[in-house]
Amino acid sequence: MPDLNPLSLWRKLLALPNESRAKTLAVAFLVSAVCTVIVSATAVILDPVQQANRRAEQAARMDAMLAAMPDMAALIEHTGGDELETLIIDLRTGEPARDVAPDTLDVEHAFSDPVSTTPLDPERDLAGLGERPDLVPIHVLREDGRLRLVILPVVTQGYQSTIRANLALEGDLQTVAAFSIIEQGETPGLGARIDDPAWQARWRGKRVAGPDGQLRLSVVRGGGTDEFQVEGITGATRTGNAINNGIQFWLGPDGFGPVLERLAKDGR
Image 1: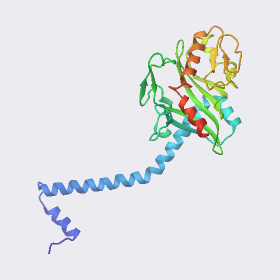
Image 2: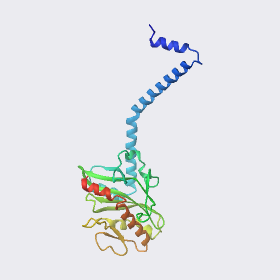
Image 3: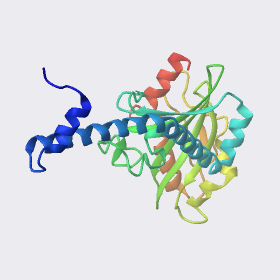
Image 4: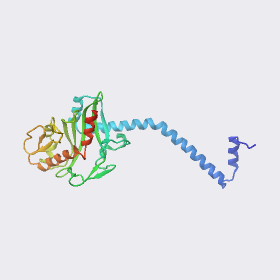
C-alpha cells in the first residue's frame, strides 16, 4: 500500500536530485499555491481598508469641488437634503453607468482625459468640443428620496479658452438654482467677467424650457427680457455666445437632455 503520509511525501520530494523535473514542478506548484493563498488573504483583509480609502478620496473630491464653488456650497446648505451624491452617467444611453462607480473614475479628469469619447459632427458640436466624453459625473441632492438639486458640468470652447462651469437645477429640473464658473481664461476686463458673482447671480431663478418643453434658457445681448434669458456681459459677446452654446449643447439631446427626462419621469 503506498505511503500517503504528507511528511513522508515531503521527505521523498526533498530526497530527489535538484535537477529532477518532478521536484522542479512540485516546488513551482507549491510556491504558486502558497503565493495564491497569501495574495487572496491579503486582498480579503485589506478590502475594508481600500473601500474606506475610496470613500475618503470621493469625499475629498466633493469637498474640493464645493471649495471651488462657494456659492454652490451655500446653496446646498440652504437647500437641505440628505447628502450630495455623485453619479457617473453614460451619455450614450442617458442612464447611470452600470459598471463604473464614482470611486473608480477620476471625475476631475472626466473631460480632460476621458475614458471613452464620441466624435461630434460639426452641426451638433455646439460647444466646440470636437468629441464628447461618454462617462460624465453629475451630482444630485435628495431629501427623503425626493430630488432637491442636480448639478451638471458644462464645458464649452470660449473665445480664448475652454470654459468649465457647473449649472445647478432645482428639483423640478426647470429652474436654475445657480451657475458657477470653475475655470476660464477669457479676456481680462471683458469675457473674464463671467467670474463676477454679480453676473453669475443673474442665472438664479431662470427657467430652462417653455410650456412646450422646448429648451429656451439662453444668454442674450442687452437686457434679459424674460424668465428664460440671462443678460450677457457688455463687450464680451463671443464669450457669452460660447456659454450660450454650451448650455444649448449640454441641456440638449447629445448632453444631459435624456438624463433630465429620465430624472423627471422617475421623480428621483
